[in-house]
Image (cartoon, rainbow, N blue to C red; front, side, top):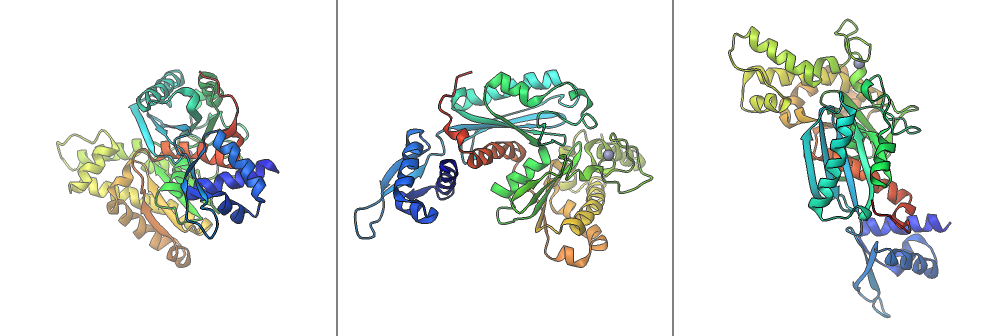
Length: 396
Ligand SMILES: [Zn+2]
């Protein structure tokens, strides 16, 4: 009972940032003495502070309690297939320090784990935060994640990680609670809390990168499916006779618009056009060229939008979300990408499933998924306040 009441009060205080004990009692219908006891606990842990006197409604002026965003900190890590990004945030997911570098995540787990440890130390040092002040570490991984075994990545997608448990490894290194989830799920969570989707209850986020994945938010929570595979839109086939995919199926969406496929297509198109321009080495370069008006690049972005549109049309008919948010490097192309998407879904979705769905590119910057990983820790702590209130946090 006490835990439930603590959760209620903590969530109200986090959400409103400033409330008096009387406000809390009124909003929760708990007795003043229950509220006072829980507030004392929060004050002693530094999660709240008595800030100033509020406006009196007749009697003594109430003391306003203020949630302390900087009473502890969160580390959020994005493991991409070929890069690592890491952020240190406060309890409102405001960034305090960040670190990013290319890394052979998909192919060399040992190197990736070492680089991850380096990234965490680096953001702690840059942010002036001691390890014992860290509430938890969130990790976004480029693989489906089974809630029952969150540290194990799916060998089908990242075979080299077969013998590694990422959660156990990080817990042993940092002695802090570790939360792991799929990168697209955490992109969706970040959009819901801080980005384009703050007003939405049902939202799909699609990350287009080396792989293509969707994070689905249904009624404000991540929808994972029975084994964590929900949202693997990149492995829905859009052409049964299409190219072979790493997953064993044919014509998966990823085989058309995943980074390697798009860059290969760019190379072939340039060669066919007789141009002696160097092909783009990254999606960033491709997007920059398209934004500069290079016709071959514009056509490639349209092509990606068109193929993506097939996947999205099916998603709209299945889930009818309020909003679809596109992320990953190619999202920076904005309307060049969205035009292709909209044209395709216009011909493939039921009119009713399009009418109420907004389709847009991400409202967050390139740190969005790492911030989503930090948000997973924050959400976990607001759901289970014991994480905030643990008595002794041993140093590393
Ligand atoms: Zn596939």
